[in-house]
Length: 97
Image (cartoon, rainbow, N blue to C red; front, side):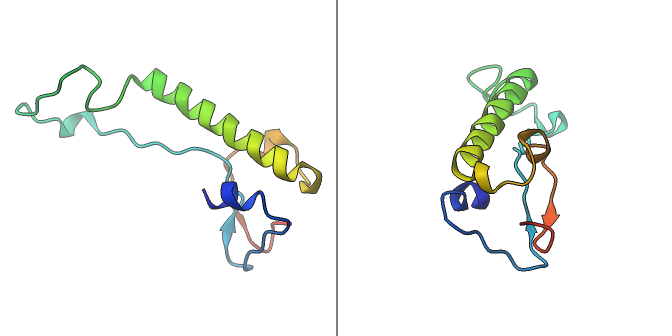
């Protein structure tokens, strides 16, 4: 989220050993084996929040929203295209420009 916020700034600074540049979305769903037979919910997806397919779809929407915001704020400063930018890779601060 830090890069999302910093994208509106004129300059973004990072120490050489910083881990930066990750445009992507991470989501963790509960493991099925943690569900106890004494656990009651009001709907089939109350514990997990929805189906796995829907969770992945929502993550893709969030990633595209994130990427669109970065491109809108920093496109002229970026040295790589959106296909590379949105792979979720992590770079060291000394690699980032």
